[in-house]
Image (cartoon, rainbow, N blue to C red):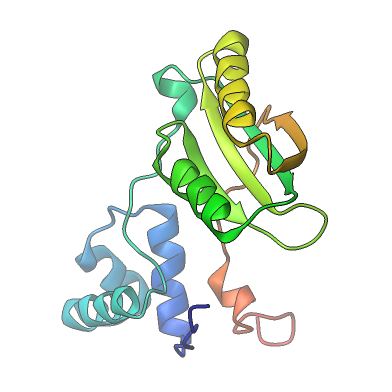
Length: 169
């Protein structure tokens, strides 16, 4: 298991992160004006947060906009698997181009996958492929179609880190 290191995030870091979530292309100059730091200070803080894996710069794609309207959340419960078979399963889901996200989870299910597909037939072919290839270790499978996204990977860092409460607003 990977060790998770803790990095102290102060109020200025939280402000930077909130601004970058709103517009990841916001200029350093604009960020520095909004939070009252120099451009160099903002740049150093962002670089330090990146090196400490607080976030990583990325583009968030919207599959529906480029021909994949079906976004399906699949929960999988495993059975009778050995180390070799689970590694093969993980390697498969990590490298499959239509599995957008894959998580090992605790609780009732062992894995959750986010699968994108062009239509119902395409989805059926893809899920059948997975179930046939790994049917010996898949005990249960539950899929649900995402109809609308209301919130995705959005954090109010000031509230999350306790800098903004009703008492200190």
